[in-house]
Length: 436
Image 1 (cartoon, rainbow, N blue to C red):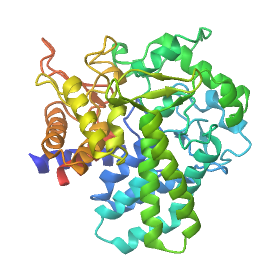
Image 2: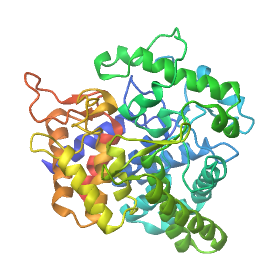
Image 3: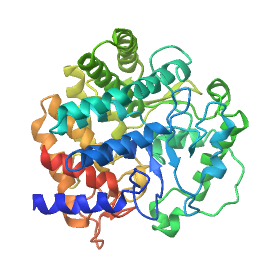
C-alpha cells in the first residue's frame, strides 16, 4: 500500500512539473506557480528528484522583487483559464517589481526557509544541497527583512497581511467579520474556477467582489506597503502566516550557522525572532478559547474564531509546554471527535463550519503535515499518528484531491475529496509523511 501511494504521488508530481522549471498545483484549476505550494512541493520532490526540487525553489526565488518581496503567484505563461490573471493584478505598478516575471502584488506564508532546511535533511548528497542553499538563502533572508521592515507598522514583530489570499486560507470564515465591515462594488467578471469544480465547493461571487476590491485599493496606491497599511480595509495579523515566518527564521539561523560567515544576519534574525515569539504569545493567544486567534489590525480587535491556523504555532515551537497542552486539548475537544478526520480547517462546533467548502471546514494535507510534525515535537505521538493516518486514509480512498470532507459519515455521499484533483502538495506531502 505504502509504495503504491508513493508511486502514484510521484506520477502526479511528474505530470504537473512544467518545462519552465516549476510545478502547477493542479491542471486546469491552477495553471501557474504558487509560492507556498512550491515550497511544499519541493519537499516531496526532494525524496526522489533533487534536481526538480532545487529548480522549484530557484524558479520561485527568481521572481523575487528588488525589495525582497516574493509574490504569491508567478505567471510564467499566458493562460486565460485563470481569473484574476496578471492583467488584473498589474505587478508592474510597483517600481521594484520583477521586470522579467509577471506576478500578483500579494504574497503567501513564508515557508521557504524551513523548506530549504527540510530539503537538506531529506537528500543523501548533503554537500550538493548545502551548495544550492548557499546560492539561495540570501534571497529568503531578504524576504524576511522585507516583512519586518515593511509589514510591521507597530514594530512588534508581528507582520500583517492585507488580503485574505495572502493567508493561504482564502475564504476562511475567520474573514466573515471583516467582510461585514465592507461594502465593495459589484464587479463584472467571468469566474474560471467554477468551470473546473462544483461552485458549491468554492467562494461565492460576492466574496470575490471583496477580494477584487482590496486588490484595487492596493493597485491605486502602486502596491505601496505604507499606503496599504493606512488604507486597506483588510489588515490582519495571522497566526499561520506569522508562525511560518518564525519557523523559517529558525531554519535560516541554523542554516547560516552551518554555512558560516553570516553573524550579522543571524543577529538580525535572532533579534526579530525573540520579539516575534513574545508578541505572538502575548497578542494572539486567547485564554478563553484556549487557542491562538487572528488579530484585526484595522479595527484593533481579536477575531474570536478557531481554525486550523490556530494550531500552526505547534509546528514553529511557539507555545510553552503548558500552553501547548491547552491548545491540543482545545483541538481534540472541538475538532477531534470519533466521527471526524483530523484536522478540519475550521471549528466544527462553530455555526460557520462547512465541511465541503474550501477553507470553511475541509481537511487540507498541508495543514495536517505541519500539525503532525508539531504534535510530534511536543510529545503527542498518538495524536500525531492519528493525523498522519487520517491523511493517508483520505488519499488512499479518494485520491490526491485538494481538500477533503472531515466527516467520516457523509450520508449518501461516497466521495470526500473536493477541489482540484491530482493536487501537487497533497501528493508531495503524503510522500514525506509515508517516508517519515
